[in-house]
Image (cartoon, rainbow, N blue to C red):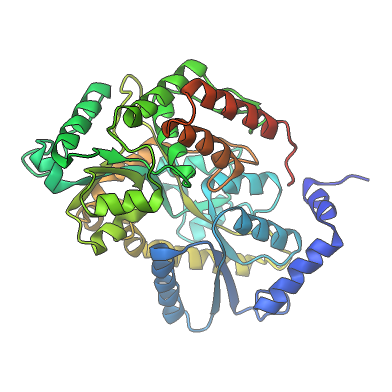
Amino acid sequence: MTFSRRSLLAGALGVGALAATSGCSAASGLTTAGEPASTLQFWDLFGGGDGVRMQSMLDTYRKANSNITLKGTTFNWGNPYYTKLSLATVGNKPPDVAVAHLTRAKSMVEGGLLQELEPDVLERAGLSADKFNKKVWDAGLVDGKAYVIPLDTHPFVMFYNTEICKKAGLLDASGVIKPLKGEDAFLDAMKKAKAVTGAYAGAIALGTEIVTPWRAFQSLYSQLGGQVLADNGTKVVIDEAKALRAMTFLRGLTKDGLFPEATDYQGSIADFSSGKTAFLFQGEWEITTFQTAKTPFSMAVFPHVFDEGPYAVQADSHTLIVPKSPKLTPDRLDRALGFVKSLLDQSKAWAEGGHIPAYLPYLDSAEYKALQPQAQYAAAADGAAYDPAGWYSGSGSNFENVTGSAIGAMMAGISEPQQALDEMRTKLENLAATASPI
């Protein structure tokens, strides 16, 4: 008898696990079996400001499509969401459309869980490849085939306090930060900012925050052309010299007192909001936080610190996927893609929350170019350095937990760069040697 990876996953989970999934769905109103054809199920993982914006976008769709009952459900971000989505798909009770990070969707494709979106189907829905940022679209392809429709790119960016930076002489005549290209220019700017604040120049969240240190490292390491994994995550290929150069640079920021050694996520946000630091390196989604706090700030791409090679910055993309389902008819697929098109047509609302739109009709518009400070870092999408392929990799994954923990401890002075690198390599090799559960 021949087993597919999909059937092996179902067998490994067992009847009890799938029954539990079905029972949970029934109890929470998520069961798709037996629902009328006019119902459309949508799952996402958005909280905070993203969650509020998405709910508004769903309401817009509902108003324009009163003949369709849209049922939107939000789950906890990270591994729990992807586990639930995979189990529901294996159990033949997936949503019609779901959100997935680009870096997590590829593992779902490998597991046979996603519907291929063929060119003629996409063309019919107005979602052909030429409607999207090429970097993002190509990054989502698997063996040249499309399974995801990108909604955005969300890169690691630089927030800067305009009042402090003006006093430090770091702004140009138009009030925009001067390019911080190269190690010397970056460090010189940090020293000037520190002289104005009297405390720290900037911050990268550490402590209980694990992912941010990885994002900082990946941005620098990718500028050096470094790779972490190969062969779909089965090999660890860290370039020691490049990794140590990036780690030593990051450790220098805290060791030399330019950045604090002990500040968690919320602490770094509070310090920037109150003007205690001039710079914050974080995801662009915090834009609403500082707008609400009325912090005098703007934003720019993460600096090209190691400028001997092409520009790169850590990023991921939210995508929209159609899980495989026995109920998926051509009509239901067209309706699902019509819903996706509605969300993309609302790219302005999504971009206002900080994410760089992937949909070219809005990305290339004069309206987006006038959206500030969002347009200031839009070029980051073309330099996106996604987490490497592997079943244990991607946003909110074990990969980010392993790498971020080691780098964060090193930046906090708990370990040295070589120690952090050795720890990271050992733990990643253990993951690489473990078979995918999908």
